[in-house]
Image 1 (cartoon, rainbow, N blue to C red):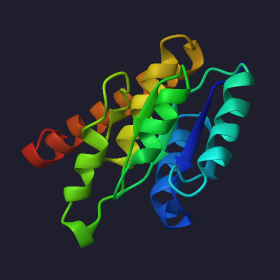
Image 2: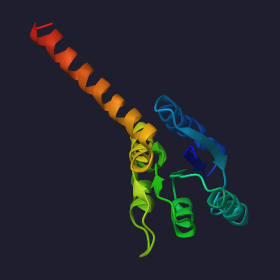
Image 3: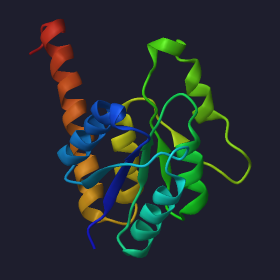
Length: 161
């Protein structure tokens, strides 16, 4: 079964951030679905959504996108057996201090926190690549392309290329 990354946002205002994650996943050939389900305002709906994803059998890594008070990542992590990556958007309003709500979770709740949307997609891909050879090859190819770019840039600047 082809893996999937559900990207669950706390509100529609997180769509730009969620779309960056989805785009980075698409570049690696990984399917994703962007959903909105607030832990604070629609917890029952969120739990129903998670139940649907958990019962579908596809390998998955969830990416949650919520700022301010990030209950979303904790609620998702506490109700699924799959890995969860919190990727909260930066907030100028709080000077980044709201990131702390993603870093401090209660015992038994352990979402990874990756602040960069592309980094969150890469982390999800690496997790999925453990058991999916196609995803593993896509990650390896992307890493090689990034390496080649750095070497080419160095050669151009240094005068070797």
